[in-house]
Length: 361
Ligand code: XIL
Image (cartoon, rainbow, N blue to C red; front, side, top):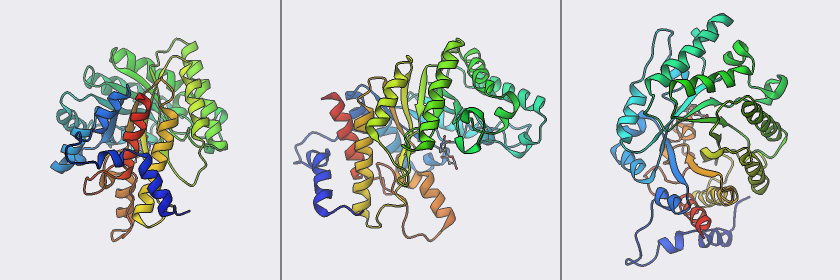
C-alpha cells in the first residue's frame, strides 16, 4: 500500500516539482489558473462565506482560481431553512468578493437538500415550491452567475427506483420530469446563464458507477430529444479510494458524453485520503498521483473545459471540517486538496500543474 521512497521520488520527478524548485532566477511558479489557461481550460474552486473569513485564505483563492462555485450557500436548505425565508447574504458576500472572477451557482434541484418544512408539504405544494424556488432564485441572481448546476445528482441506484433515479421531494412531486422542468424554468428566468446537469460517482468503475453513467447518457439524450437546452454536463470527481477506478475507461465515457454536443466540467474534484497511509509524505504522494492520473486521462477529451476542486486548501475541505466535528482532537486530518492547512502548495498542486502542462504539450 505504502509507496516506497523510490516510488515517491519517481512521482515527484514526474511532476512539475523539480522544475519549480529550480534556481532563484527560474521563472515564478504559475498559478493553477494560469497553468490551466495554457491548457485551454479554466481552473476554479468552490468557496464558502467562511472561507473568506481568513484573509490569507481569501488571497490564495483569489490568486489561484479563475472561477468559483458557491459551495453550499445556494442550496435549497441554506437559502430556505424555513418556508418564509430566503437567505442570500452568504452567496451575495461570495459574489462581492469574486468581483470580476465568474461565479457558478450550486444547485437548484437536488433531492438531498430538503428542510423539514418542505418534506411536510403535499405533492401539489412541493410542485409549487420547486417552481417558486427556481423562478425566485434564478431571477434574483439573473445576469450575475456564469452557470447554474440546475440539477444535482439525479441518479442514485441505491434507492432502487425505476431508471435509477435518486429519491426525494422533487422526484416525488414530478417524477423524472422535475429535471426538464427545472432546466426550462432556469433558462426562462436567466436566458444567458449556462445550464449544467451535475452528477456524482460517474468515475466509480463498479456496478454503481456503470448504472449512473448509463442513466446519465440516457437522460442527456432524452432532454435533447425534447428540445431542452443543456450546455454542460458536470462530473463531480469526489474520489473515494475504497472504490475501483479506471481513468482511461472514464475518459472514454467522457468522450462519449461529449458526442452529445455538451461541454464537460469536472466540478467537485478532491481525493479522500482517509484510507491512505498515516505518513504525510506517503499520503501526499498518493493523493498527488491520483490527481495526476485522473486529470491526465480526462484532459485528453477536448470537451473538458473546466476543472474545479471542492475547495483549495485542506483546512477548508468538507472532509477536514467533518473530521474535526466528529473528533475535535483528531491528530490525523484529511489532506485531499492541492494546498495544505498552512496554505502551502502540496505535491497535489504540482501534479495538477504537470497535468495541465501536458495537455498543452
Ligand atoms: C457538501 C458541502 O461542501 C458541505 O459543506 C456540506 O456539509 C455537504 O455538502 N456533492 C455535492 C456538494 O454536490 O453539494 C457537496 O457539498 C459535496 C458532494
